[in-house]
Length: 159
Image (spheres, rainbow, N blue to C red):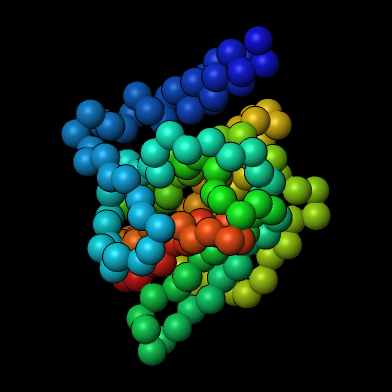
């Protein structure tokens, strides 16, 4: 019952966004467990159907002028990343991510300063679902992947 309520609330909150975006014409990509250096400005991404209960414990920012991109890392409390589903929109200058079976730690750690990220909004729908909205300062492209042991979700951002 809780999952049905969470699903309904998610649809209610994000419904207008989904209707406003033409997701039917978006390319759907499966994200990898290694960096591929394929930068995208739009599209839908996911990591398959793996399920792992986890908690988001921190977020880190690091810009490297030498490499030409900023790395944003989401740190989890587990060895494997939770199920992930997201959307990249260059029109809206944002990346929206859903982490399934994931809680937001009350003492979320944050380190570093961001060159490209304006703000990050967290929407803990229930204990089983965490939505995250990353608003970018300007249009940029992103490379998305995950790492394990410990679990990390990585977004590399470049202009």
